[in-house]
Amino acid sequence: MANLGFVGLGVMGGNMVARLLDKGHTVTGYNRTRTKAQWLIDRGMKWADSPRAVAGAADFTFSMVTNSAAINSITEGTDGILAGLGPGKLLIDMSTVSPAVIGMILPMPRFKMRSCETLSPAPPVVRFRFPPIFLACWKQP
Image 1 (cartoon, rainbow, N blue to C red):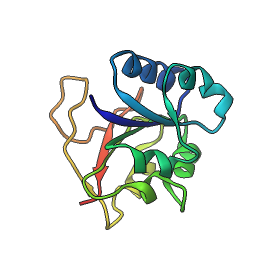
Image 2: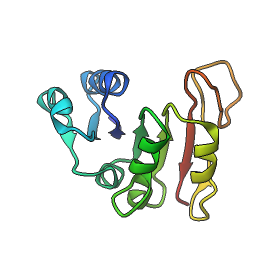
Image 3: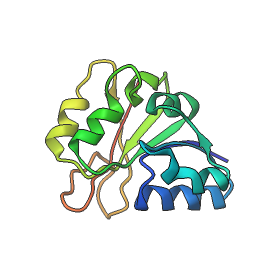
């Protein structure tokens, strides 16, 4: 089974993690408020103390947060997801943020874009769909 990470365990993210756990996947997760994730920990999710730790533990890290400030706080800095991505690891962001915010994160020179399949009948590329969400993927070569 897949070794997955998930940052942002609100209503949508939490339910996605629950389904992944139900199917037997290993999931390491982080949420700003640990108590809101306790029900997932009780179901077998591994807790990480930072977004960086999630990315370090997983082959594929999903992020799903509510706004631009939240995406910046989980991706940037020494404890951010980008600091924890190693070679060959993949970040899949599904946050509700503006395309401009992702445009500031994606061009970082140590990361490169990778084609992503979306759930809509669209070509396998990074998609900006607003609303409701978009899917962006990038990895460290």
